[in-house]
Image (cartoon, rainbow, N blue to C red):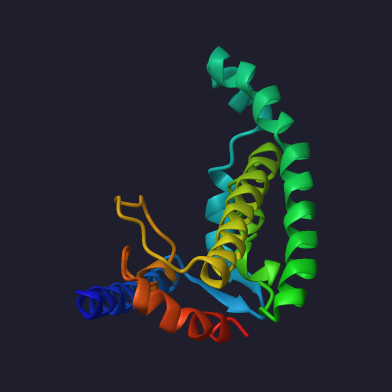
Length: 192
């Protein structure tokens, strides 16, 4: 059973690679390319995007009252997110160093490119930056937690896990004590 699950995970990775190839074709359709780490649109595309920009004032006029009332709640989460970011940074620099586990590179989990879209006004760019930061942070946290789980308790659960991390499927099966004892050091060595 374990081998079949590992095979399916490999198939999922293959599908993800095919999705990436399809997304790369979007570069041609929307006429942009990468110049180092920056996205660069053709000039005529930038001009057509600018024509679709909606001013902040127009955007606020069309906003629902519920949307406007939620803004302080949404942005009130910024400080806890920053504190959590700092906490996880300290956690992995201390614990991962002590355990000999390779640290997660934060920059691998943030994609901050929406500010380059000419059709976004300054408020929409701030919103996009905030969402990119929060989602990148969640992905970063997940990888730090996944490496911690692989180090301490690489055992699958008996119950279904909603969207488990990629490392999960390689863990020992629930109830397989012999595999857990035999593979624990191997799981730890893979993290170096």
